[in-house]
Image 1 (cartoon, rainbow, N blue to C red):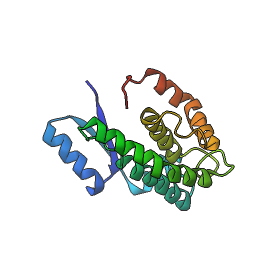
Image 2 (image 1 turned 90 degrees about the vertical axis):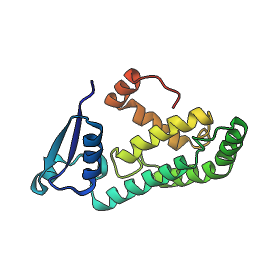
Image 3 (image 1 turned 180 degrees about the vertical axis):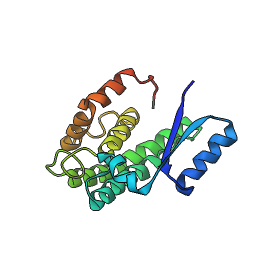
Length: 168
């Protein structure tokens, strides 16, 4: 049985809804409360090393998420689903890829000089997009290099090797 740990500040805030959902479903979880004074020592470096870097990472993740939300996941008609995916990858994907490649430039990571959650999310999304449209990013070598670097992070590589196999 999986065990769950919810970490959030010592307040209701954004964590209260997940607490309600756990309670409603009768699922036991560890409610780990963090005091504000302890936050700097707990904060992970994946969010960026400054407020600007955090905002940039958030914006990139939101951009990727906006594209992902356009995928017709729940379309039941296979022909219509294929048409919508074709249109998405023909009209929107090139703009997304150009934007991401422009933002990456000649850097190793999307934000700053070390990996952030934006790099990880980019890999997650590109893995899914590649199922829908193999080779969709082939004309953007810097982005392909980024996904290779993320996949080479030892703990990420380990997870990818042992995660359950699913289509998406």
